[in-house]
Each structure stands twice: as C-alpha cells, then as structure tokens.
Image (tube, rainbow, N blue to C red; front, top):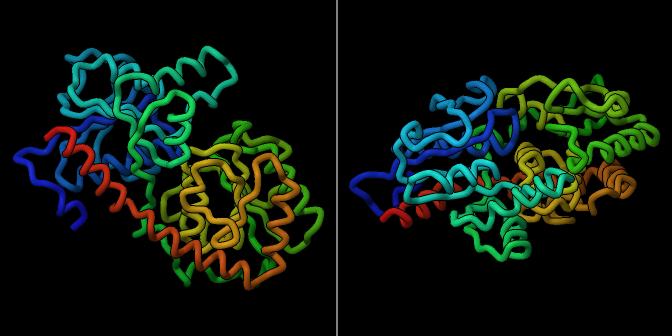
Length: 351
C-alpha cells in the first residue's frame, strides 16, 4: 500500500489547503488530487477557497469551505499544516497562527502579469518564511536564481489508473482518413502560445489535406482567428473519462506554451499514446526528452513546430516510437509516487 513505509505516528497531522478560487485549471486539479489522495491515506484534510463553487468536473471527496480573503484564525479550520497554493494565499498563510506553513509552487507566478507591481508582489512571496514545495526542477531553478530560495521537489502526477494507454480507444476512424492533431489551450493567455497555435494550425491546413485539428479550450471565448483554423473546438468542462477518449483520438499532440510550471497536458497525452511536439516551456523538461518520446522546439517558433509535426505525419515508425516511449515515461509519474514523497515531507516536519 502506498505510503505504508512512512514512519508511524499516534495521530496524523491535520492538513488544510488554501485556494484563491475554483476554476477548471491544471493547478486547481493538482490540489484536488492532493486532497483526495491524502484523505484516502487517513489524513484529516480540508480545502478552503475564496471564490467559485463546488466542482462538477472533478470528483472531489471533500466539500470546499468557502471563506472571505484573509480569514481570521477563529474562522479557519484547526490545522497542524497549512498549504498556500497561489501567491495571494502565501500572504494569507504567513499571517495565520499555524505552526507548519507550506507553499505549493506550481509556476513562477511573477510572469502572469506585465504589471510590475503585481509581479513584485508575486515574487516577494517566495521570500516569505514558508517551506516551498515545487512541482518541477525548472521552478526550483527559478526560485534559486531569482530570489535565492531553497525548495523541495515533489513533482506532479497523473492518475495512471485512468490515464493509460487503451488499445481499444486508439482505433482510427476510417471514415476520416486523416491524422488528428490535438491542441489543449485551457485559456488564451499570450504565454500559453495561443497566437502561435493559430499560426501552426493555419500552416498545417495550408500544407496538408490529411489533417484534422481538434482544440480543447477552457471557454467559448477563444480567439476568432483560432476558431477559423480548427476543425473541432471542444470548450465544455470534460470529465476525466471524456478527456481520456480525446487524448486517445489524437495521433499528434501539440503544445505551444511559452512557459509551464510542469505541463500536465503533454504528459497526459503521452500516457494515452499520442506522439508529442512541444515547446521547451520549462517544466516539461522533467519528462520530455527530444528525439526519444517527443520533439522539443524553442517557444515562439511556430514554423519550426510545423516542420516537426510534418515529420511525424510522414514517418509512421517515428510516430510509433514516440508513442511507445511516451507511454513508458508516463508510468513514472503516478500520483502514488508523488504523494509518497509529500507524506514523508509532512510527517518529518511535524514529528
């Protein structure tokens, strides 16, 4: 049983995660996985958020407690450990009367805005006296480089019980007779590479008649130019099973993002057998290996990305190699392994 080797305690610590808001996003999904899996191991885990509502797109095993920003200690759940999850929550956690304070850092958040005040406020959170848990080595390097702060690497994970290769789902639709190119853009932020995605899709459509482009986006409000160059846009909230079917339908998965703290979609696509073409967006370096399980290109180079996609379209053997090696890679990033590490960190802190 995962975590069985961890040192025994008379009582397991009470853990509370603090989210700013509930949205359909990879970072929120990661927190939900932490909460569910720690709960399964017998921990008293609570989840506090300020905005949003109970999720319908994820089977969360705990009801979210909604409190206004900067809650008072008397209103906050009794906790031995509290975990900040986004830069404003780091300031909140710093002010709480809780002994053990952590900061789950899933991105280098100063990049989220061009406003220098916002960026400095975000950057300053890494200087607070919180223990930093990072999901990639790229983030660890950024914290050391930018603010000279140490961190503890725990990685990110995927649900390998759901996200794994299923041959029966990989059947090619003979009616289409086209290769399916899949792009996931959970929002239209510039650093997600939305403009580059337009150029990639437009050029592929211009140069090939045998491609079918599917876009999974976070909302109906996608860029009009992008809408024109995809064959199918899926914008509704998807269950895990629906997402798995979409990943399996892809022959090639394309990620155009400039920067990712980890980059779950490329790993999820690998798990389901898609050949991946991705930018060198930072966090993906933990699982993407150029020429072995994917092609990696520099960010903001859509023409180079198109050339790599065309190479895979024309080389069935290479596409099969990337698919097989990607499936192997994905098995190394199970949530059980991540939570094993996290549990040891928490227990060693409170002992």
